[in-house]
Amino acid sequence: MVACAALLSTSMNRPAQAGGGSLPPSIGKAFVPATILVGATSTLTFTVGNPNVSVPIGGVTFTDTFPAGLVLAATGTQSVSCTAGSTFGGVSATAGGNTVNLSSTTIAAGGSCIISVLVQGTIAGMLNNSVQVFDNTAPGQIANASLQVDPPLPPLISKAFGAATVSLNGTTTLTLTFTNPNATVALTGVGVVDGVPPGLVVATPNGLISTCNGSSVTTLANIITIQPTITLAPSASCTVTVNVTGLVDGPKTNTTQVVMSTNGGPGLTATADIFVGDPFQVRYTANLAIGDSVINFTNTGEGVPPPLLFLNAPVANAPVQNANLCVNVYAFSPDEQLVSCCSCLVTPNGLNSISAVTDLTSNTLTPGRPTSIVVKLLATSGTGATPACNAATAGTPANPLTNGLAAWGTTIHPLPITPGSPAGTFGITETRFVSSTLSTAELTRITALCNFIQVTGSGFGVCKSCRLGGLGASKE
Image: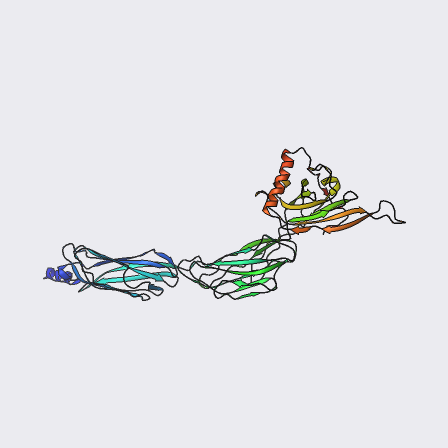
C-alpha cells in the first residue's frame, strides 16, 4: 500500500504531456547584444525545445511581458526556425508594445523552435526579463535574461576661429560645432556657455548664423550663451557662428564650458587659439644716403590669459608667458631684389634694434647699395633655452609662424640747415610697421632666397646681428 501511494504521488507531480510525453517543454532566451544605448535595438531570441526524443509536444505557448523601459521595435518576428515535423502557431508582437505571445505550437520529438524579435531600450538601466513556457496541460521551464541599457553618449563640441590671426580691431568668425555621436538616438537640450577671453569681444553686430535646430543664442561683450534647447538627430551635426573682434595684441586662448544635454548628460570642453596682430610686418625706409633708419622690435611677452570664471567654471591656472621669438629680417630694394636677410632672437618683453645703414645695406647682395629699402619682418618660434634663429628656414613646418612681434622704425635724417641751427642736427621720426598678409608663395620665395644666400652664397647679403635695446624710441 505504501509503495502504491508513493507511485501515485510521483505520477501526480510529473506533468502529463501531449502525445504521451513525460517531460515539459524547455525554454531559453538571450539578448544580442546584451548591452545597448538608450534608443538602440537588440535581438531577443527564444529557444523552445521538446526534451522528449520519441514524442512531439503540442499546445506549446508562452507570453513574455517586458519590464518598463523595454518595447518591441518592430511588428512580428525577425526570424523563426523550427525542426522538421513541427507546426509553428505564430507570434503576436506589435511595435511599441511590451508583450510577445507564442500561439499554440507543436514541436517535433527532440526538436525545437527558435524565435527572434527586435526590441528597443527606452530608459537606462539593467532590464531583467523572465518568461515561462507552457504546453497543453502544464507549465514548463522559466527562462531569464537581462539587457543593460546605457545612457546615450554626450554631445561632442569643437570650435574654430575663421583665421589663425586677426589684425588689431579686425574681425573674424568663431564657429562652434555640435555633434551627436549616437547612431540611434537623438540628443535633446544641447547647449553650452563660451566665455571669450579678454582682448577679444563679440562683434557688433554679431553676425550670428546657426544651423542648429531649436537653437537660442544670446551674446554679451565677452560671453556667448547657447541655450540648452538644441535637438540633434542621430549622428547629426550643427554649427553656431558669430563674429569676434580683436582689441588687444597677443595670443588668445578660448575655452568653452562643458557642453550639456538633457538625455546624454555633460560632455567635454572645446578650445581654440587665435592671435590678435599680424605676424608679418612691412615698412618702407628711404633717404638712407643722408641718414639712417633704425628698426626697433619687441616680443610683446603677453601671457595666455586664463578663461573667464563664471557659472561655477573650474579655477584657471596662472597665465603662461609667451615664448621667445625669432625676428626674421628681409631687406629688399624698391624693385623687389633681396638685399640682405638675418634673424634675431628676442626674449619676452625684450627690445632689439637693427640699423638699415650699418646692418642691412653694408653687405648687400645687389651690386649697388640702395638708398631706399623695403623691410619685411616675420616672427617665427624660438623654442628651447638657446633656440636657433634662421631666416632661411622661417617657412618650414618645424618653424611655424608665431605672433607677438611689435615693430617700428626710427628714421634719423639731418634737419634742413637754417640760420642759427647747429651743424649736424638730426631729426627723429617714428613709424610703426604695417601688418600685412603673407602668402604661402611669398613665404616660400623669401626663405628660399635667404637659404641660397646663407648656404651657397659668397657671404654677401647676410646682414649683421641685432643689438639689444632700441634707438630713439621706447618699447610700445
